[in-house]
Image (cartoon, rainbow, N blue to C red; front, side, top):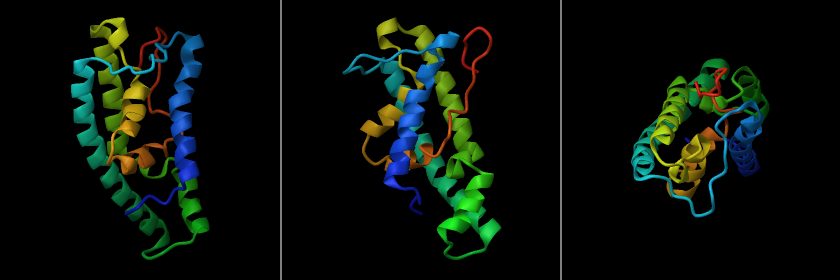
Length: 165
């Protein structure tokens, strides 16, 4: 099933997710912008390969789940934009609210953060870069990007010491 979100909506979602963590710098969050041409560590690239496989599968499942969610609320068949928006209001992340996808995003954000603590500073990767910006550079992951762009925010937080939780 193709994601029924506009190109402008996907672009807005991408911008929101890539830019919003930068606002946390003032709270002590481990926030930085990598230099142009940055590739991260070998371990980050290996982890990213695993992430690609998992997020690709989870995005497909999330879209099926979203179709089932729409049908459960609206009945089978085609639905108007207004009808679909009623369901979106109850689940503002749409297919990105699929629990399995949320779990993958959280797991890989935290895994990226753990790796960042093991590698030298110049090889560290901001988790949002790892989860989304690198995915933008890969071909065949447009569906994943479209689903992730539905997230209104990253499903992660900071503890009082500035650690991702």
